[in-house]
View 1 (spheres, rainbow, N blue to C red):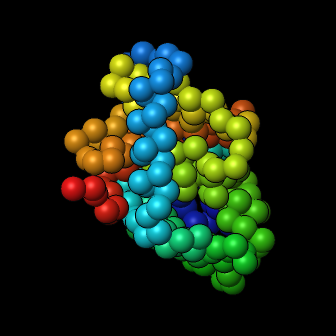
View 2 (cartoon, rainbow, N blue to C red; view 1 turned 90 degrees about the vertical axis):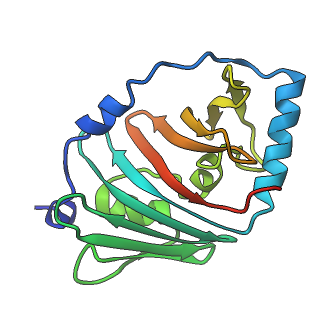
Amino acid sequence: MTRFTRFAIVITLAGLLLAACAPVPVRQPGTVKQLAAQAAREQALGAQQSWSLAGRFAASDGRHGGSGSLEWHQTGQQYRFVLRAPITGKSVQLDGGPDGAVLTGAGKVPVAGRDAGEVLTEEFGWDVPVADLAWWVRGLRAPGRPAILTFGANGLPATLDQDGWHVDYRDWYSERNPQLPRKVYASRDPYTVRVMIETWNAPAQQ
């Protein structure tokens, strides 16, 4: 029995997969206007040092997966994730930053590693690109590396390809300023990561 099984959050992702069956948005290369608007969003949101979100999270290695509620708090490069299992209510907490990451609650002793990805892979078998995801979950390209964007009919990013991952934006909080994603699905065969955001706590522009 693995630690992941002992934590009791190995469940089917069927419910989340059903939620993923929303109509696929129109996707098209960015126009000059859309790319300029995206650059403005990235400048505004990238400058925010502190933000948080709450919602649901799911990850899978193609064979096994887990899901639950998520609280994500970010301050600069420092982050804290709290993942809570849907049935048992048990939770794990992941704290980290440039100096490494520590996972508590999954076993009797904390699990430490160079970064969040290493810790999550060791403990659960997940490949979660946490450093990039901190940008992608806000609808932004991770800085300093090539990326390909397509845009939907709403003028907002529909897909983002970067670092070998394909990110699909299924829904947005378009009433916010700047706009922020509601559903973010990332995949790199065989791995998938899904974040469905119920609340954002991020400064809005007036």
